[in-house]
Length: 117
Length: 112
Image (cartoon, rainbow over all chains, first blue to last red):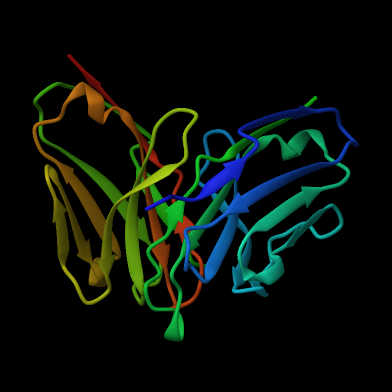
């Protein structure tokens, strides 16, 4: 079974530039998550999708971050404009979801390491 | 506020030792708890998932226990090996359909 795919693996940009990350979840997984992991910290949820609808985006800095999940499969996360403090690993995860949120075991991709200089 | 805490932040042991990693959480009404492994520069690998109705789960040399009343989970690693060196993360879901909330992790170093 193919895992969660993310690209690119690494990205270096200057502050105030824009960047986009892509995620392809495990086939059949209805729920998709984007997490931000700053060095030395645990991952922090940015946004959660159930199919193509947003379940939780309460911690997404909406003035600069945006995410979409068209057709309920692939997802993109964008940052515009980037700040130095956005340097982190961006992790995508998926779970089966389903009725009342059952099957919540989450599987993660390799992540995208973003460096803002 | 729902939080997950992992102590210690780092642990060094000699090869062959049995060890325990600790995870504590506020609010005992959890839905499930998941242990992950993270190698440097890599994503997270799921190790064990414990549902709220379960007391423990086992996979090979790993055993995870859950004590909701005390708000704690432990990950027991038997006969540690240098290949076990990694960061171990504990994460909790408090409600069905909601996302995992993570601790900061314990970085384990096993020396040969």
